[in-house]
Length: 79
Image 1 (spheres, rainbow, N blue to C red):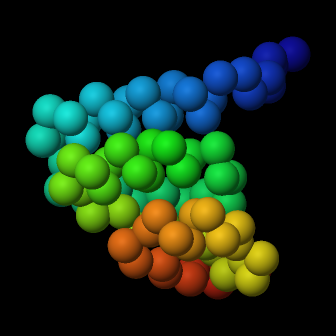
Image 2: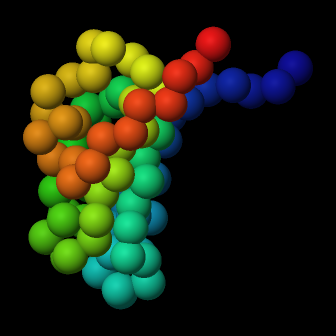
């Protein structure tokens, strides 16, 4: 049986993004999420001069905090 637990995934993504941002390795961060737990990561990346693009997969109820901390929002329809 596969172990499908999702523990600390947001934290690990955030740490990776923060590290990449702080080293100037990336110019743009594209997040496909509706999870506002990533807002601190978005804020950090923007402070480091990284353009943050949020892809909301056509979700009409995207949390306001995510929208505020994105430089660009793209809506990609998902069936």
